[in-house]
Every structure is written in structure tokens, then in C-alpha cells.
Length: 178
Image (tube, rainbow, N blue to C red; front, side, top):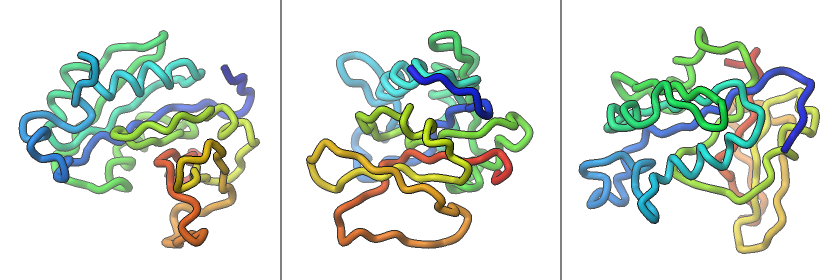
């Protein structure tokens, strides 16, 4: 469990993709609602990350988002309220985040709703982040993780580590940047 005295944090789960590579499964349901052991993948994410002291959890849904809305909107996990938003048309990641401008003024941890990285994200926001950050993990099965900070996410820059690192799909975004 992390203790945080800095700015308040909200968790944003990006759940808008179509899952076209697994279209046989996602023809009727959105990818984050695929079940494993009779439990939605999105439920695993929410249960895991609600142990952190987030003020609120936002789910940004798109494809078949009405199903996500019915299952998670206005529910709570570990005392943290969940709020869902559905894109009326595909806005892309940046467009989806624009829906939160009037809903929160907290810093954000943003993560993909279709992947899970077994990491201690407490380290991620305890680094006294003053800048936008992206969490990187080794692009093989090693157990170590790294954090790249001072990355301005608004600029289109590509970071390459000779194939050794990959984007883990977890981001820290300061409230002044959205």
C-alpha cells in the first residue's frame, strides 16, 4: 500500500478498443469483458488497483461500451467509486481523455484495460513525479522493471532501447497536462 501526500490521484482505465485481432470473441462483447474463471478481465484490474488510494476510477469505454457501463458504472471497489464514459464516436486515446477535463482535477494514472503488468505501481507514483511519465518493462521475461520519467507525452517522440524495453501501458499524467 502506498502513502501519498502529494496531489490526489485518479485511475483511468482505457477500455475503448474493438479487439479486432480476437474478433471471434469480441463480436458480441468488448475485450475487457472477456471472462477468465468466470470473472471479467476488467474486474481483475479494478480489484487489483483499488488497493491503492485513488480518489476515483474512470473507465473510458468505446466499442460495446454500454455493456461496460451496465456492469461497472456507479459501482465501487474497496470504497472507490467507479464512473464510466462511452465515446459516441471513436476519439482515440487523447480524445477519450478529453472527456475527463471537467470531471476531475487530480493527477491521473492511466492504463490499458486489456493488459495486466504484475508490478508494484506504488513505486511509480512515489518517485515524486513532477513530470508526465510512462512505465516501461523489459521486452522479455526478466522480472525487473524500469521507470522512464521526464517524458513529455504531448510531444511525438519515440524512445527505443534496441528492443529491450516496451511500453507497459501505464502512464502518469499531471493534472495541468489534460
